[in-house]
Image (cartoon, rainbow, N blue to C red):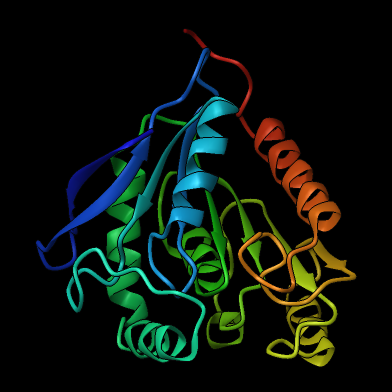
Length: 226
């Protein structure tokens, strides 16, 4: 079980919440885990706890707090509509400032991982936030909005090839614009990491997680001091 703490954005001085899961055993690094459009849900907290068990001190920021503090939504139509509304009302510049506060709150090395809307925000962090050692982006539908920006740290991308919200042509366009970025394609739909969703695929989720942990290990996420 983690705890909730408050962080302050350097962009506008706003205080927002973040779920913090402390690393277990020796510390591998810090990790900023970015939510799906649905907020910092039980699923996101479970992911944070799992990364903490692997040795990463993890922060999962509540990035809609200016609009709806501690927002969490279900996967029903009402939840999706509210989540999309809040995600679209969060400007990328504002999100970048909040993520910079998270990176600054963690001792180095710091990594970033994000899912769905958070997958695009992970790309944003890799491009704009100083102090990110490596990043792993999962099914970031809105990456094309940021495709002109260049990551300043190693990053890998994960997409489900049966994802109706991210057609293969979109994935190919991202890969073509950034040929040095590894793009992994899975025989899965959108949200394949979440066991709350119909598109959950345990094998694809496991493989993507292993690739993510390998990336972090290669870029400073080795065992540290207890």
